Image (cartoon, rainbow, N blue to C red):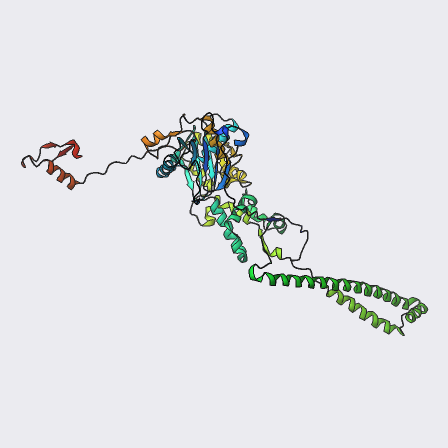
Length: 528
C-alpha cells in the first residue's frame, strides 16, 4: 500500500455532526393574530420535528429538528411558556397507541402546559393525507400504507378514508436494527477500529451510502467481481492523529523534527545518487560503443583504448562488467515510497451497503423470528375480498425515515409482482419527503381544520371524558374506550352485609326477598 497524492478512487469522510445548543425562536406576529396558531409536533422515535401550522414560505418546514431524547436537564432556566401554552397542539402518535400512553401525554399537555386544545394523529397517516392532497386524490380514498421508522415498521390498511385497525400489522424491525447490524458487520471486519465504529456513524452510513437491492442474491453475485467491487466500494476515512497529547507533546514534537531532518537528508542523498547513476549509465553506454568497434574498425578501437588509458580489450571488458554491476546495484538501492498512514484508517464498505437495509425484508439476518415487510403486506391483503385487495393494491404508499434508501420502491414493485395474481394491477408511490411528510401532513390538516372543528380535544372534553379520550378524524387512530366494571362483591361479604341489615327479621323467613337501604351499596339481596 503505497502513497498516492491523487488516488484513482474517491474517499468519503464522516461528517460527525456536533451538537449545538437549542435555538430560541421568537414568536412572530403571524402566529398570534387573530387567534393563536396551532403548534405541530411530529414526535418520532428517532427525530422530533416541531413548527407552526401557519401559511407562508417561512413556515413551510418545521423550525425545530432534533434527535429525540428521553430527558434533557435545563438547570434553573425558565421561560414564559413553562406554565401555560396558549396555542393548540397537533401531536403524532403510533398506530393503535395504548390508552394509557395517550392518557399520560394528554395529562402532560393539559395539566402541565395548559394547552387549550389538542389533536392526535398517526404520523404515517398524516403523510398519506398530505401526499393524497398533493396528488389530487379524491377524499376519502383507499390505500395501503407501508411505514418504517427507527424501532418498528407497520402495514396499515386505509379503507374509505379510515384506518382499519383490526388488520394492521407491526414488525419489530426498523432503522435502529439496520444500524446495529451495520455496526456489528464492520466491527467484525475491522476489529482494530471497534472504538471508532460508533452508532452515530453507522446511521450516517445508512442514510447516505446504503441502498436496497432489487434482487438481493443477484446483487451479491455482482460484488464477487473485482472490477465491480473497486468501482462500487465506498472508502470511509476515519479520523486519526499522529500526535500525542499531554506530557508527551514535547517529545513528540522533537521526534517529528528529527524525522523531518532525516527526510531532508534522505532526499539529498537520493538526489546525489540519481546524478551519479546518470553519469555511470552515460559512461557505460560510451564503453559499450567502443567495444563494438573491436569487430570492425580495429585501428579506431585501439585508438579509443589509448584515449581511455587502457592496454587491452580484456581490461575494457572488466571495466564494463564492474560498471554494469554498479548501475544495477544503484537501481536496487533506490528508496521505496513512504507508506500512507491514512490508508490504515479507512473502512471499505462493500456488501454492507445492501446487507444492512435488507433486514427490513429479511429479519432472520439479525436473528428476529418475524416475517419481512412484504410478507406482512401479503398477509394483510389476504384478509380482504379480491375486490378490496385490488383497491388497496392500486394505492400502495411508502413513508418513514427508514424507507429513504435508493431502490426501495423498485424492490417493493418486484415483490408485489410475485405476490399479486397474474395480470393484476398495482401502483407503488413513495413519499416526496419520507422523513418530513408526517409533519407536513399534520400542518396541512391543522390549516384545514380549525381548533373548533371535529378532531380536536378541548379541555372540557379532557375533564369530562378522561385523558385517554380521542376525537377521531381521517388521520387518527380508532378510539375504543375501555369500560372497567366494578369488582364483584364476594359471597361471604354479601352474606355478612345481608345479615347485618336483616337482624330484625325472623330467622324462619329465610326464603323471603329482603330490600335493603340503597346507601348500603346492595340494592337487593335474596337470602336462601
